[in-house]
Image (cartoon, rainbow, N blue to C red; front, side, top):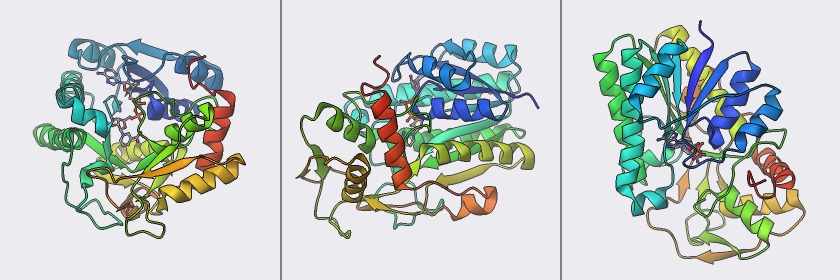
Amino acid sequence: MNKRILLTGGAGYIGSHLYVLLFNIGYKPIILDNFSTSHRNVIQNIKKITKSDVMIHEADVRDNKFVTKIIKDFEIESVIHLAAFKSVEDSMKNPKEYSNNNLGGLGSVLEAMKDSKCENLIFSSSATIYGNNSESPISENSKRVSLNPYAETKIMSEDMIFDFSRRNKDFKYGILRYFNPAGAHDSGLIGEHYTDKSTNLFPIISKINKTSKGKLKIYGSDYKTHDGTPIRDFIHILDLVEGHIMSLQYIMEKKQNLIINLGTGKGHSVLDIIKTYSRCLKKDINFDFCNRRLGDVSISIADPGLSHRLLKWKAKRGIEDICNSNIKWNRLYPDGYNF
Ligand SMILES: NC(=O)c1ccc[n+]([C@@H]2O[C@H](COP(=O)([O-])OP(=O)(O)OC[C@H]3O[C@@H](n4cnc5c(N)ncnc54)[C@H](O)[C@@H]3O)[C@@H](O)[C@H]2O)c1
């Protein structure tokens, strides 16, 4: 087996953690990233953790010739395609950019894989494709519903992969539907960098805590949950990236395709998270209730049964681990990668 793996979007939040894990277990990951939503300084910190140089190509994944060249030159057998834009809100403002980048990127990767006889793909999908129709816990058989342009790109991407697989018999894929990745690496050297565009809960908590300005907005206090705030399935980033490795090994060894949820099967409300975070931080996080956001579901929890059965994968870390790791990353890097 060629241990070289191409990580598109490998400089991002999930990609950087995945890089470190792959490296630690003997793979030789190669990052291809255009830094459109990530910070170049992440590379320095990956180097600190791995005590090794990082192989990185700064390029756009839509540059099909370049992607093909990298796959051929390094005889890459597997691609983990993470590169995409990921904000639901932003996608409603810029739907064309989302389809251009997310679908154009995947199309380019698939064509490059075909031209270079590279046959294993792991793809980052998302629980947002379940829309608000599904009862939690949500199984992989639940209906896919596109409520926004971002979800639409993920549904269309999955369909592109199904179609490509029908036409290319030796090609195998693992589609991973992430629930809510959160937390940081144990070293505190890499984590989820916050920007003005951040919409995930933990980077927003980091920002409120750092600046001590403003209050965390909780969208909705009248959901039918134990405290009225929405419930989500937060999965520790290290559990999430372990799920990638096990998925890749599964599709390569069994020569089977895979579509799985990566979630814990446990839900926590936004208020639960704020309380746990404040307890771990030993400091209050200020918050305010506002109106519900259009399209937000009351409860979104994965049914992780299939990933347990097929991969023997199970999330090992809990909410306190997520909070403590995020706190450590914030203490070491209060401005994220702006150092
Ligand atoms: N983090 C989450 O909450 C979450 C949840 C579900 C699914 N996902 C999916 O997981 C993947 C990774 O997410 P993340 O949280 O690491 O996001 P991120 O924004 O931190 O990382 C994405 C990376 O892709 C790169 N990129 C984007 N477009 C590119 C292009 N055209 N060419 C080259 N590089 C490009 C960015 O520069 C960035 O480094 C995405 O596909 C996202 O949709 C993320």
